[in-house]
Image: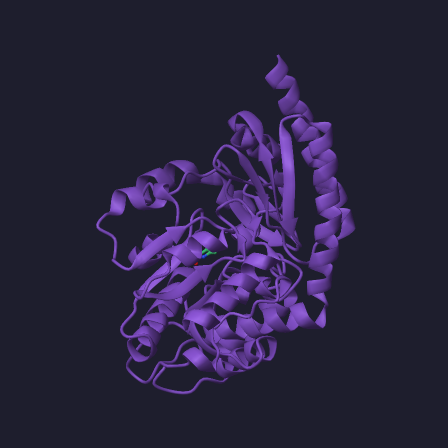
Length: 406
Ligand SMILES: *Cc1c(COP(=O)(O)O)cnc(C)c1O
């Protein structure tokens, strides 16, 4: 269909009729993307600081991903994990190169990657810690939407409706080593942490905390799991977010940006917890040749084009803009984050209003509840993109301030 034909259908009404009511959507239908920009069905352009929620790390339709997928789709679309497939092994090799030789298991999503990590930790408990099975995670965390990952997610709003949740999960306050030590018992097998909490509002751990977790896990024979689903893939300026704190985990989970927009998840383990044997775990689609080809293209491009450095530099530049805006507008404060994973607090639950106004101005932002504005743009961002975004956000905030006073 051409853009004009696409535009003829009432997508909002059709969605209501045919799609379950799981998403509160903006009344915008996105049909095309290129770099850091997307276009809607009316041809309006937006600068994309949401990037599929930290997924489109190379921006939209990056030539490396387009070529990799186009080529792979003509060679082999899918093959069972009963057989070897070259793209899967290539991606695992690349990830081993970034993680001191950790071995991979590929799934299709972040929740599934965490499910694999939970199972692996429990196997470790059976084999090496007298059957210990409990996983301690953090308040305000997010680990996914399956039942086990919901049980691990430390936010009441995600859990309330779904009881009874699987047993063996407990949450303690984030960045509080004493609370974690007190919560540890003979039943505890693993600690699951986001080194930078994403859905919780972009809250980085402290270095002492992360190193304290590593030390505690060594002393108590526990497994340290780093959920890198959102903060990994270079977003914080390091390939894995734990690298900012120097506390190497036993297990790493990844997803979102790993294949630049093609669905994939990964669970990596070091030798201490490399315990799965045939039959323990599996997947039909996980490690699919197309997803892995896109993953190889994405990881290679990040490395070859120095996008880690770019994320760090552009992150600092954008962080400076956010600091300036929070000084200019009284209802914005606490600019924070690492690399291109940033947020500010918003007073009076005005975050959704700001996101809506920004969208009208051609800038896509994300709010977490009423009080947090989150920005997780592509790692290919340039200073010109940031100058433009800062201008659009400034205009947006000026209008919101005026309306609030009126
Ligand atoms: C998004 C996210 C998940 C869940 O990933 P899905 O692909 O949506 O299942 C898990 N952990 C973190 C930190 C995330 O940001």
